[in-house]
Amino acid sequence: MVEGKKTGTERAERAGRLSVVATATDGIHVVSLAGEIDHDSGDMLRQALDACDTPCPRIVVDLRQVTFMDSSGINVFIAAHRKVGEAGGWLRLAAPGEAVMRTLSLVGVDAVIDCRETLRQALRD
Image (tube, rainbow, N blue to C red; front, side):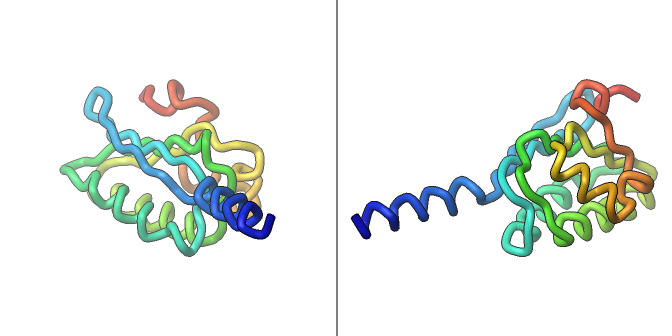
């Protein structure tokens, strides 16, 4: 039984980890995330956004499968927003779930970074 509990806990920890898939659509970098954005996964998110470093970068971060985000994610998004803005590009956040949107709203990130309800809306200019 104890071993079964360990396995269950390990699965839960794995399920919460962040996974990142980066693609491009019509010259827009799409970074799709799933899992939790926290101090353990902040560097992975930062690296994924840094990999989109092109002249005049346009980046959409698909948040629909993100279940949790703390200040680590907010800090990464604000830094990326500044960086791409200085390069003449933009960063948009797409489809944040209720919990993630609440976090973005509480700190005012939604007033600084363009947040769209769907990925399709975020991909439109």
